[in-house]
Length: 198
Image (cartoon, rainbow, N blue to C red; front, side):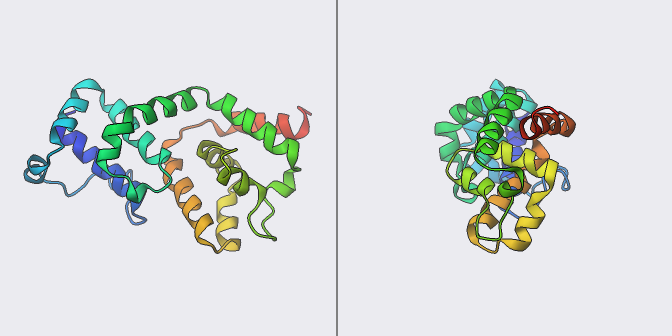
């Protein structure tokens, strides 16, 4: 990947995570960036450095990891990625490599405290699933996996009309296409937790 392609990948992913109207895959990773604007950037040398150090897939994952680790992608700027990017990337890689274990641990804790129906109950405000996420007890990855299994996001979108859920919902929807999982594998893990392997 050339430094300019690295910059375009950054812009495309930034657009994906910050704009409702932009989808990274739907728009085939395209942006309106020009080579001229790239050469005017003071940070272009950082893009040159990262394009030499990482493969195309690693560059894409590097930017994804930084956007998903940030609570507010819109406020994330390249200076922060330059400072903390490698740390965020390494932590994200560890999560992804042990995703089954992470999901199992978090769900065991969640379902030890609440029964299955109660977890998704939102008639009296935020459901336990969302509360656990907001308190840092559930990862964004677990939220995405649960949404891929139960499709609870659409139901929450209808019932919860508050900015907190809207922000979380957007993060889940924007991250979901990048979290490639075998849904049946995670359904089995969940079934074993909820029903004790019956």
